Length: 101
Image 1: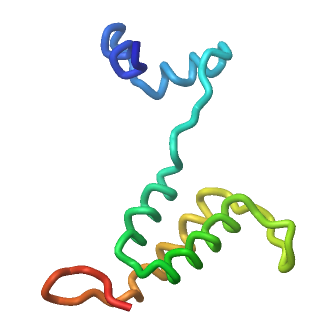
Image 2: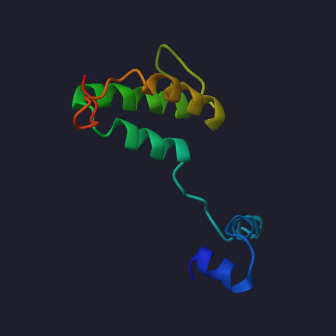
């Protein structure tokens, strides 16, 4: 049974149900980070070379890197603020709304 369906049957929020399942060791939360979903949606229309560079940067922000220059992983709150501030600088074509580089 899916969590949402189970939560609806017993009238509690899905978040509370997931917390209870997690505390009981019955769930492995493998949901994608909200920021990761946003990043994927935001960079979809970019050219492959630029997207590749941004993907590497995003991975280092969240997972850190042992290769020089070394970087510690950022918390989701801090890392989420970083791509948001730069996303608006990618111009969009007025006729289609797609980003141009």
